Amino acid sequence: MRVAENLNAALHGLLDDDPTAYMLGEDILDPYGGAFKVTKGLSTRFPGRVIGTPISEGALTGVAAGLALTGNTAVAEIMFGDFVALAFDQLCNFASKSVSMYGRRLPLRMVVRCPTGGGRGYGPTHSQSLQKHFVGMPGLSLYEMSPFHDNRAVFASMLERGEPCVFFEDKVLYTRQMDLVDPLFQVSGDDDLAVVELHDADDYPDCVIIAPGGMAHRALAAMRSLLVEQEISCRLLVPSRLYPLDVEKLMPFLGDVVLVAEESTAGGTWGSEVAHLLHDRLWDRLRRPVRLVHSRAEVIPTAAHLESQVLVGESTIHHAVREALRG
Image (cartoon, rainbow, N blue to C red; front, side):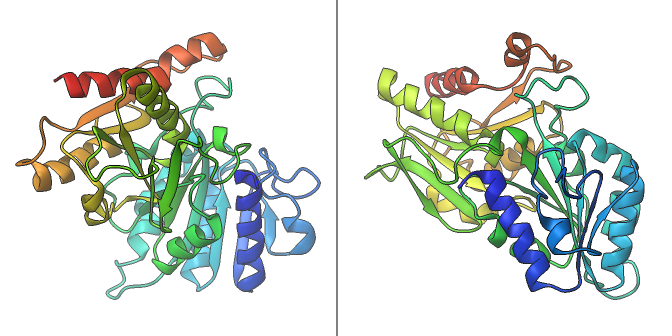
């Protein structure tokens, strides 16, 4: 099953299980079924609860927050994650605050879906990874789609938190197969953390890579080339929830060299938050500080050969791991 099909099935399951659940977004109705066809079939099966909206991310996010505030479950789709900037006020000053600012905790079952990232040639304003702009906001949780996490379980986890969640969906994953890895590696873990490593892996690989779901295939390609060309073994950790990060869940799988890879540009990122949390706990056993890997601080071009020079790729991670081990 492809990742987009798994996500579509999760949304069908949510609307089927929860009669208070609504889905809102631009062009999500059949026969179009969303820009990436993730909402295909939903409006036909659940008329009245799948709502096509005008082109206003602030409005549709505000309506979703209002539905959640009155006890419903709301899933809002931002057509391209870049446009979530237009809904920042609704997320920062309304939805996230409404969980706690009325004198008692008020559950808000709300998910804002954000197709994100480059690699598709969509250009500067349709290819960004804006996760870092939402890190550290009280009352707002951040998750990222992964080929190693069943989306139905992820949605259950998000809604169980009872607070607004932003769900980043790297667009390059939509056509990829769930749980598909090179035969050299195996996948284990649970709904919160996927662990990808060699069969019969050592307890302490040469390097541990921590990356969100959209980076996983690039990290795995680098892991394969490092193993085949340099005999360097790596373990990949893919958390489902980016923030607040359950750092204790990572601890049993870490060694003395750690690298965090993400597609955003450097500066105040999720990766730097991870490094901060790990330094507090691992400083006495790390060989050197946690290394961070980012995309270049440039506008993302449309042309594929230029886009690949800006975004984090296999070669970037490969080189960063070698540098980290070299010291």
